[in-house]
Amino acid sequence: MSATTVSASGNRIPKIPFWAQIVAGLVLGVLLGWFARSQDVAWLKDTLDQVGSIFVQLLKLAVAPLVFFAILVSITNLRKVNNAARLATRTLLWFMITSLIAVAIGLAIGLVTNPGAGTGLTPKDGQKPEHAGSWIDFLTGIVPTDVITPFTELNVLQIVFMAAVAGVAALGLGDRAKPILALSESVLELLQKALWWVIRLAPIGTVGLIGFAIADYGWDLIGKYATFTADVYIGCALVLFGVYPLLLATVAKVSPVQFFKGAWPAIQLAFVSRSSVGTMPVTQKVTERLGVPKDYASFAVPFGATTKMDGCAAIYPALAAIFIAQIFDVQLGIKEYVLIAFVSVVGSAATAGLTGATVMLTLTLSTLGLPLEGVGLLMAIDPVLDMMRTATNVAGQALVPVLVAARENILDRDAYNAATSSPIDGAEVQGAEREVAVPAAA
Image (cartoon, rainbow, N blue to C red):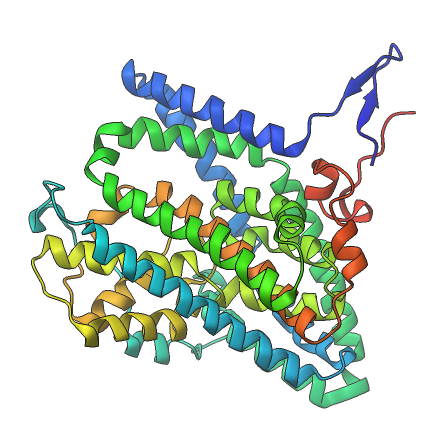
């Protein structure tokens, strides 16, 4: 895609890189949010809220069908991959390993910093959520009662279940399933193309999301949660820029810098969109760009976008459990810490790759026997935390396919090393030009 466009007068107008548009949106959002709060401009605050909400709603609009067809197609694509069962097993194994490392880091930071101490918050500040997750809800909720409700209520876990069943059944049918698979692949491409259009609105959505967060919460409220907020960001940063590079260098034996340059479009979009599923097409494109075979990436990335949550389902619930236990003066022991690790590894699918991690948090609290009113204490600053959590999630979803592909000797190392030869711009963020290219004027 050309980096410039041509005006009617013949002058070339430089195309603003996508990352620069995102940064501009962040800065403008902070300024507008600060102005709306300091000057008490109600209409500006409401406008920012509406802009951000519409962007998130547009992302969610495609989630249900996108997840269904992505999982279905990804499972059937395994028939094209040698040692498919081995690859799937290794992928799941690395998901678990990295989740365990992430939850251990979250617990360690929480035990050192005591995030619930000195906040001034009390149990009275908490509010019980309307819908709480438990192991019974999680296990019984996997199988839907009908095929319509999961899509209307956006129950991603049930959608994943139905898609997995459909994918395995299609594999069993063999050639007789080819018409259905061809239709599914076409629908998936259509959904991805529509989602690309929404993704290009991310700079505008960023203005609304960040602006409303500043206007509504303000720095004073965030100050009460300063230690907890810092813990979440530090924990995610340690995993993102410490654990992941170490695994890349020692396990995959590739350059961590190359990985971040290649994966950055997905990571930055995840930060502002707060949706792993919404970022999934970008994550898949950058994973393929990093040399992971397309047939394997088309399985690993959708699978990860719905089950691989190092930020939302490992670091965050570990820290949140310690924070809430301290507010409610509940002592946690070794058994509780082991349960937190278990929930993080097994229950991460409950997070569903959507904005927020309330279901995972309530699942963790109910398992530990902690008051669910603690969820209300954290909802106020959840959007601020969710940005860094989701960025970590998506980085992990791109990392594991690279690790597995490298270990199985199917990683195209030349493509990996060449992935960052050109600057990161809008064309890279949008993925393949054939899907979203806007030709420059003649």
